[in-house]
Amino acid sequence: MISTQDWADTQLLWDYHQMGHTPRPCSVAIGLGSHDLGVADAAVDLYRRGMAPLLVFTGATSPTTRERMPRGEAVHYQERAIELGVPTSAVMVEPRARNTGENIRFTRELLAEAGVSVSSVLLVSKPYEERRAYATARKLWPEVEIVSASSPMTLQDYIDSIGDTRLVIDMLVGALQRLLIYPEQGFMIDQEVPAAVMASYERLCQSGFTSRLVRDNSGQILSGRP
Image (cartoon, rainbow, N blue to C red; front, side, top):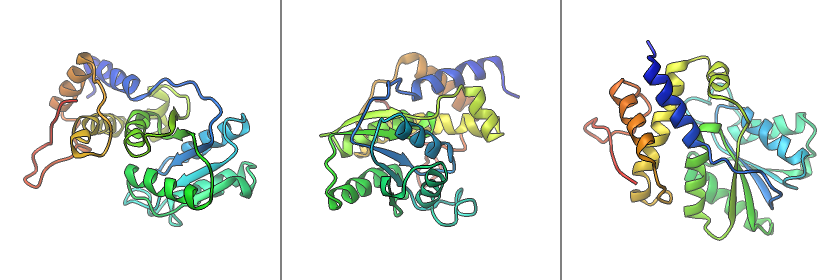
């Protein structure tokens, strides 16, 4: 049962996870691989609007995408973009990355090897992973400007697209935890987390939305503060 308080807390996390950037023309758009083909659709929309002359899709497979995307997330994204009319010359694939840090590092290497000059990046992700992706890119690629982007949708729209309310809340909670613990591990920049967001996160944890939280070897949930 999802309480009224749970819904309010979830909405607060959803809003916080999105950066609120206005898309603008950048050197390249990078679509981060996942189970969600909506990331590819959002990248294609940006390309059509003249926001980037080149798309790079990055991602291998994971336990959640192996069956749905057997050729790899980036390859399936590429196929989607071409199906939607993007010329093959405007799409590059980075097929090895298995986490957000590798998405950024491997894509940076791919573009450097191809001789593509990059001063700004449209970083396209799932809506609730905008802030995590931004923080990771700022840490690993500090010399370029990062503009976050995702498919414009409400929390309810996203829940409807996934079809599992509890799973979506678990994912939002897990994404927030990573913003707290990963900076101290060197994976991303530190970001301010407002007190109201922290309170919502803690209440949702207490309500049992914990399946996507990172735990230590003894099974204890890792905690941290920005």
